[in-house]
Image (cartoon, rainbow, N blue to C red; front, side, top):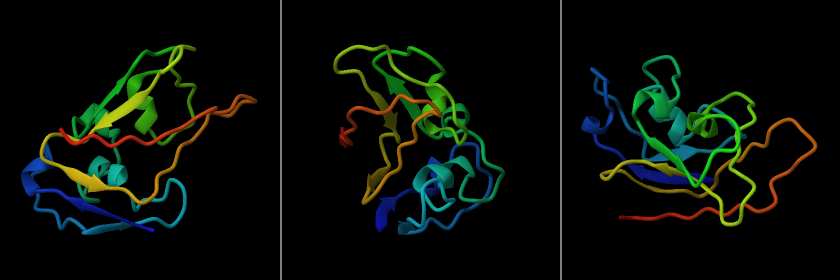
Length: 127
């Protein structure tokens, strides 16, 4: 499965180097190092991984936080990050006003527990 993306060099905040941006991110397995968020987190695979919300590459938002921190939803470690137990709760990721991305697959991880994600839906907004 492939994903298409267009990124411009100026969109790599804090990155002093020119980066070759792939036209496709090829999915191999969940949490591989081939995805968009990993690419942004490593400034085009030129630096060590850092949470993309913390580095300012993306912005994460949520209807509420019941446990954990916003940046946990784009992290690479298992954490207890969740919304409040309320109807229509959500997490979101803002790639920025000049990035656009057409996903063909995505991974959602649940924490290590006996609970499970009841419903998940991917909504893409272009504003």
